[in-house]
Structure formats: C-alpha cells, structure tokens
Amino acid sequence: MIGRALDWFEDFVADGGMADPADAARLELKRQHCLLVMAEARDQARELGLAPHLVDLATVAGLLHDTGRFPQYRRYRTFRDADSANHAALGLRALARHGGLAGLPPRDRFLVRLAIAAHNRRALPGRLAAGGDAEALALARIVRDADKLDIVRVMLEHFGAKGAKDDVVFLGLPDDPGRFNPAVVADIEAGRIGDYNDMETVNDFALLLLSWINDMYHPRTRRLFFRRGHVDALFGQLPDTPRLRAFAGRYRERFGPKTP
Image (cartoon, rainbow, N blue to C red; front, side):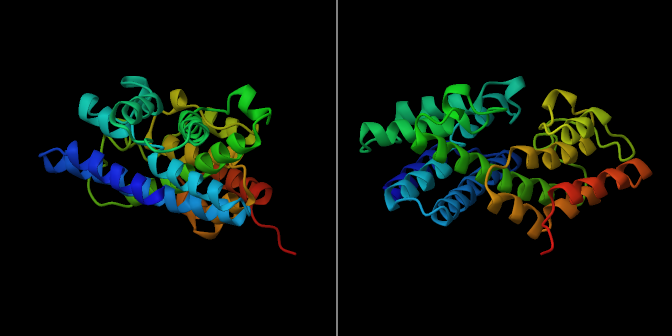
C-alpha cells in the first residue's frame, strides 16, 4: 500500500514539474513536506498503538494530504487558498482523476480521503469531531497534527533564510519587524487558533504558528513542538517588547512541559 502510494506520488509530482528554478524550488518544498508529514503521521499512529493497517492508512494519508498544492501552485502561483482554491479539494480531485487511491478497498479510500479533506479545516467538521467513526477521527487528528509540526519546521527554515522573504511562502505578508496584530495574541490566550485574515505582517505568521498549540490533539505533538525548539524559535522571531515577553512567559507556563 505505502510503496504504491509513494510511486504514484513521485510520478504525479514529476509529471507536473516546472522549468523556472524558483517555481521548481517551491514545488520541491511541498514534495519534501509531504514526505516528512508521512513520517510524522506514521510515528504518531505507532505511538498510539493503532493496528498495523491503520498505521499504513495514516502513513498514506500523511503522504497525500497536500497533493492539491501541486496543481494549486502550477495554476495560481500561490499557496494561499483564499487567493486560489481549497488545496484539499484540489488534491481529492487529482487523486480521483489520476487514480491515486486505486487498489484500495472502498473503506480505506474513504478514510484517506476524509483525512485529506479535514486536514486544512480550521476545526474538524462537527459530525467527524463527534467521534461516531473512531477510525476516521483518529486518522484525521493524526494528519492534522503531523501537518502542523512539519509546517512549523518549514516556516522556521524560511524565517532564518538570508535575504528577502519569499512572498509565496509568506503569503505576500510584509516584513515589518516591529509590528504585530494583538488580535492573534488574543486568540491564543482565549484558546483559539489564529485567523489567517488577521495576519498583517510576517510577525503575525509566527504568532499564528504559535496559536496552533490550541489545535494540537496529541500529547506527542505538543511535546515535540517544545522539544524541537519550535516554540523558542518562533518567539525569537517576534519583537522584544514587554507585552510579548509577558505573553511568552504565560504561553510557556500554560502549554510547556511540566517539571515532575
């Protein structure tokens, strides 16, 4: 199952290659992201002790979750859904059109497709979140958490890169080092994830990533968010103001690992 999905994925990405080096680099960024989310999803499923078949389905869903990013970028030259199309829907369409899930039994196709459809939603759909289908809920939560962990890695690499920030990766946000939107901080403190519509600068992107702690379901995800240094690195991108220093302290106290 996993080997076939990998072969399909690599062929799908290669068939849509772009000649311009900047375009090719952005597509490669998404290719690597998909491979790493695959590994994160597999590891999370194993830690949960899921049956081997469900571990395999979580692995496949992690790999294919961002299939839609490739046609999205080729068509619109953006990764911002609001300026183009829902990339999860584009991915499901591509998988159906090009046989990405061919050979899987109907139930398995349903579970993978549902995890892909739910991965970029602000919150899980009510019927899914209610838990009537325990396997579907487990896979959706695994892929959502795995995706968040690796997106933060990707963004921190770009925060730290020399030179001007890539407008596509940073969704066209201006790099204004001293400015941030307090509304994103308010969302975090109220237990919500930030709203993309509230992002006004690159600093707000860092705050939005920090807000994802409120939607990380698995203890492993939160643990790795801190252990890998992501939290410290994201706060390091923000202006050093008394308000943000106090907020950082409250954040670490509320969400950080507790000393036994």
